[in-house]
Length: 419
Image 1 (cartoon, rainbow, N blue to C red):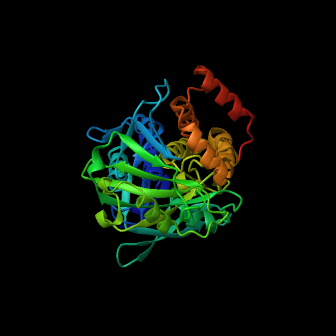
Image 2: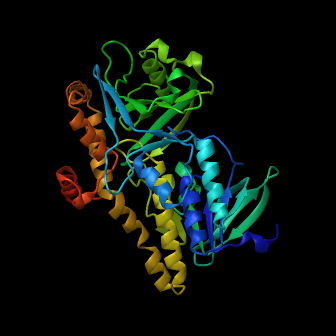
Image 3: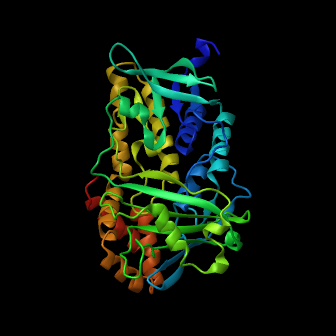
């Protein structure tokens, strides 16, 4: 590959949902975009593999063919001895169903979708740092290519970081994770289970540090049927700042041990090892644009604090980063272009900041065991209340054009300060 091949209008670092979404939208706008992926697809990613209606809409907007993907109609929520099944809401803005797709297949398929739109995908390229011009502005990236890690330089007037939690490029520019924002952790594995074809996603709030008098923990366990003979079972600890002293993998094992043996979700039915990953929430790193670098997805900390959902927001912020890049490159280089690009962080705050503020408040309540026990024992007896709560947590609303609940949420969200 010669140096001419290592140039593009925009470089996208990372071929996860955020990177492939950005690449697809950039290519559709007619720009030359190169996606640099450190691994070779398909590859493993720790995830629950569940796509909410919000994620389904993002895929629909990109024209992704989801034929044959496993659909699910809602959630089965367990807590405090209560169980309730809640369907996804029927709204104008969002589909009324979710999807299941393993990240190995999802990420590879989205990358192929971006390539079909005209993006270039270059695999086994490890980006080591930003390439800076004389003014200290990002003008590309330094990288190591192939199994022999050959040094290389890629050049572009704009770079989109879709690197995930690591955020190497952002860190190099001094954009560090804010310690006052929540950082979750998730662990999961796949098991061979007869519950593989369940139409509902199982969510359980019956998590504890262990023992008969143990406190509940600020998170939830999940068991999502993959439709292929396996289930994805995992545990999301939505706020680790306070420190419980409990090891997340031990919590997962303890929770699964409380479930009926005939579900076959325990460790003896595992078909993959237990793996973990961080959940960067509440716009934890910013600004999301600086000196030629745009952040998208987990690199910007866009995971929803209410429920740990990240794929939907990765797809959406990939689109928004691409739209910003297109508008920026259409403006004259210099002050005018920078003025366009600098609107991107404000756009993310406007889109998510207030909802994330409500979500961080929810985490503070979730960390109180007495409230969790009361809410699950009494709240789950009222399915209509659970349905409304899940709409709020999932950021699924028709806004001011919706019903009374949607209008109330719209008012509440407007009153909340952005993170």
